[in-house]
Image (tube, rainbow, N blue to C red):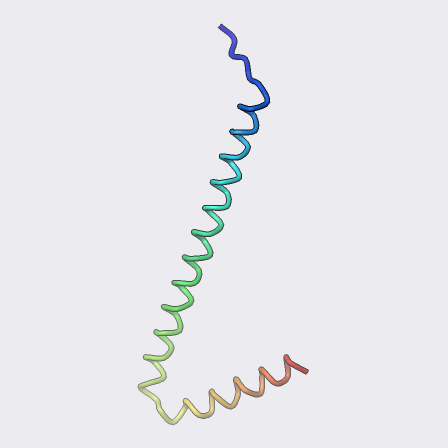
Amino acid sequence: MPRIFDDAQLNTQADAKTRRKLQDQRRMAYRRAIEHYAEQCRLQRELADFPDLVPAGYLVGEARLQRSAA
């Protein structure tokens, strides 16, 4: 028996796909944020072993920010 689709069913399917796509996008953004945080923590731990490099890295980062802002 052929299945008959009406407009409401098509819209429901499209809405479900859109909702899943948005959920996937949010999930990936959350995952990237966690990975970024973990990377920052790892770098902080590595820099803690070399405290004399921290001020130099800070100044380089500040100079980079100033150049990008100009």
